[in-house]
Structure formats: C-alpha cells, structure tokens
Length: 519
Image (cartoon, rainbow, N blue to C red; front, side, top):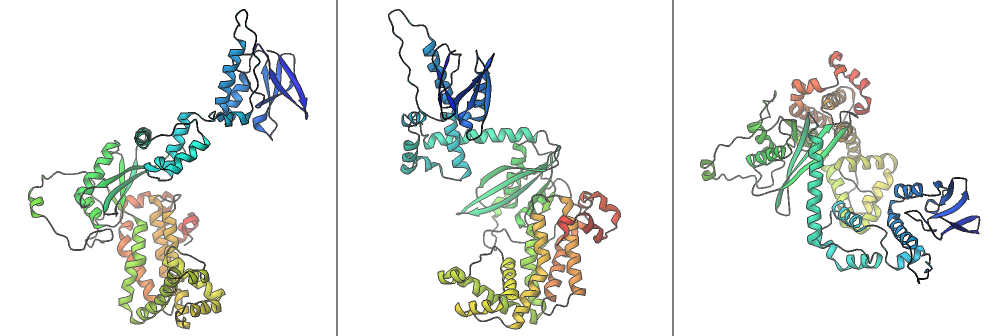
C-alpha cells in the first residue's frame, strides 16, 4: 500500500495509488494524518466537526472499515464500491495493456449519478414503517405525487406496489406476532384488557395484554388483536372471540384477570362464562354505556332453540376503574339533580351559560379569536372559568357581553368555584388510575379509599352553599360501584403489603404512597 499526500488547510488527503488491501477508502471519508513505525493514523471526515482519529495497520484497514460500519452504517454502500474499484486496480494486467488512470469521484458525483445511499431492503422497510406508524392507506404508494417524490430523490430505488406492500405488511405482522408469542411464553402471569366499538357501521374487538417484567419490575404491554365483529356484539360472540385470542397466543392458562368497561354485553359474558367465581358478583343493574344499537332488543327465538350449548371459559373479570369513575362523574351526578331542587336550579342555570359560551367558541371564528383556550372535558373547562373568575372576572363578563351570552350572577360564580372544589379530587383520582406508571391493582384500593375520605371531609369540614348534593351523589356512587373492592380478598391481598398493619388508617396510606394519594 502506497500513500501520497496533498497538504491543504492543515489536513492531508489520502490518494491510494496501488497495492491496496482488500477494502479501500475514498478520500472524501478519511484524511491521512501521520505515519508511525507499524501503522497509519487517519482522521474520519464523516465525524466532522468532531475530531475522530483512527489507527490502522499498514497491511489492513479493518479498523477503519469497522468504524464506518458501526458509526456510519449508511455509508457502507460507498465502502463496497471503493473495495470493488480497489480490486480492479490491483488485478494483474495482461501484456500490452497500459494502466488506466482511475479518477477519484466526489460525493456530489454519487448523488448526480443516482448511486443509492441505502440498500433496497432498508428503503422498503422505511416505507413500510412510514405506512404503519402514520396509519396511511396502502394505496398511498400508488399516488402520483408520492412516486414523483422518490423518483426525484432516489431514482435508482425501486418503488413497491400496493400488492407488494400488502405482502410485506403480512410478513411484518407475522414477525411481530412470533416475537410477542415468544416473549409471552416466558411469562407466568399476564392480564388482558378488551373493548368493543363501532365505527363507520362496522364493529371491532380490540385486545391488549400486560405483564410485569421480572427483571425491571416495570409494566410491559402489547397488542394482541383488533378483529372485525360480524353481526351484533352480543355477550356470547364476545366471549368466543376473546377466548380464541387467548388460545391463539397460548396464554389461556396464564391470564389472571381481564379488564373491560361497564358495558352490559361484557358483564354478562363474564358472569356466564368466567371460569373462576368472583367473590363479589356483578350488580344486577348493568349499565348500557357501550350498547351501540337501540335500547329495544329483539330476540330471535329460532337462534335460541338452535343453540348448541357450547361453553366458553373466560378468566376472572375486573371492571375498568377509570370508566367507573367516569360514570360517577356523569350519570351518578345526574342523580343529585333529583335530590335537591335548589341544586338542580343553580346547576342547570350555571352550566347552561357555560355551555352557551363554549358553543359560541365552536360555532364562530370571531368567538374563537376571543376565547383562546380549548378543553377536553367539562371539568377542565369549568376549572378554567374558575381561574378567570379569580384573576380576570371583569374580562370574563366582557367576553360574555361580546358573545351575547347572559352574564354570570354572583351565586353562579360561587357555584363554579364549589363545583371545581368538589370535582377536583375525583379528577385527580382518575389521573392516577389512568397513569401507566400506576396501573397496578394494588393502587386501586388506596386511591378509592382516599377519594372517599376527601368527600367525607367536605361534608363535615367545608362550608358549601350549593354543592352538598353533589358531594352526596359522589359518595353514594363510590360506595355503590366500588363497594366490592373492600370485600374482594384478591384486591385486598394485592394492595401494598405494608399497609396490612395500618388497620385502615388512611393517613398512613397517604404517607406511604404520596405520589398517588395527593388527591
């Protein structure tokens, strides 16, 4: 290997002339710095502006190749082309042939000539990832503007068709499923969640799985299925599909619990087919929250007579605590309106004006310019109004006047403050239970216990003028919907073990788990 140098600006470019090792390097990627007794020292130009110096043997440049492969993998295609050129230069020439001068190409030359910077396989994987992560339809790859873009940027890369992309998607699905099944085969205990919904006149069933990593003790999750439901999603159909998913991943004997919402179809499926009898049975009054059809249900007598009596085995059932709290914050609070006529009057008057204010924001572009904020829930919207009352009450009344919304009376402003004060602990409990970090069964009992304590404190220690019926409705809903957790031996056993000696002292609970108990 012989090296000639050309000094300019303090750097020395490598020009490989003859007798090279198996793999050569282009001067646009490395600069020669110095020569020692047994090696050469190069500077990697790809690492600029960082100064990275590499030492390599005089007879082999393996160190340089390894560095590029590890740190600059996208440049390996250039490296292979350098290697091929080096082989041609070092090949013996026949008599009469004159050596041909090999001109060094520039980086700009590679791009102009359409030489790929990534392999076809890598390019196809990036396109597949773009389609999957962006939830784009498969026909995206056939759109003219999409194909024009890549023909201009990477003219040498072949663009996959919609059919090919579909096969790649199937292969990727099989690969991910195999990897997940292998991971689940190592777990002893898992739990699943499932939900059914309708969209565009089609029904679907989704199933996810969760387990605790034995080494890190962190919660791990995965998606098992998103299947189309043909026909009505009745309790027996849901039970059969869920059991098929568990069997497909060979986890039927590992599922310790399945969590669903309060939909009557799921409640009946588990009350009929659950293989383990729960300590506390589901209530008879089932919520119709997830029913997508009309409330009137028509029963086909022929189907009943033709039933084969096939039995399904489902794991123990757990109602989603977040969905249950949401029902308390909506349906159960409606019950407070029937308990107190003064509360009903002030509540409907105040929230009616609030709704008129929010509706104006959605309907009018001018109103949107006046009201800059957007909210995702009624509580957050009312909480924002409370902030305006405390800091910008005059501006709030002026905004109502601009939008032709009736001004808030003094009693209504007081109601807004009390409403936020009462609902804040419930909203905080909902945030705790929705957190990925706190998604443990052992957190449920302390969180609901502290929420009950906060509500009880409001009934005895807080001077509420309007929202006492609201507090009573929340307490009644908590006791009715979550009463089973204080009698369920499984949930009591999964609660934080050190709380066992506290004898229900909630102050000790707050002290030991302050992160989730600051409601």
